[in-house]
Length: 251
Image (cartoon, rainbow, N blue to C red; front, side):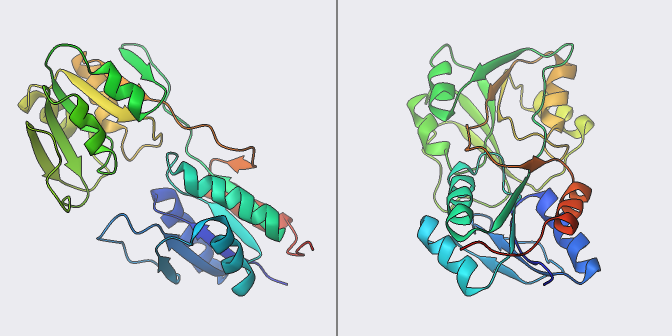
């Protein structure tokens, strides 16, 4: 029986996988969480929105006779990744994670690490700075605990309500970005500090490389800890996994 694939997406890697399986004629659906308003066109069917927790995802897998799941969500989409592990275990569905390697500190980098968003907020309790807050829009409200900084926010979509940060400037733009452009952005706004999630990959790395080039410090938020699962780092590795793993479901 040929695979019937569910891709948990929202990343460049998920889109690349969708293009690859479409060329093969494989039955596949790309799922988005629905946090981004301007979704890219895709060559395979897509669905938007949550599943309703572990039970809802497990029911979706059964109802749609999904044989394989590839978790290609953002490295910080921890709840979705945890739900995928549990739901696939419940339904005996094959699961693989397509995960970007994290960024690693290189020569010239000035990094301070934070274990999570809350720790990053605490780390900003010091003197006033001009901060590029490159974390997306979901957690902006938490930084209201450090209202004395000036924040540069680069978002894919305009926020539904103004962020509760007294001093900020919003840029609406979608990557990938270049190092030269991000270096100019940091200089134009007199940025003192870059705060970023360790998303990995090349699409959002420009700001990290630009900070290195300009000698700016980076407050790097580490990835959440996830349950054990099989992981690969490329679309080709996913295709190889699909070719070599059977589609027989357990009981």
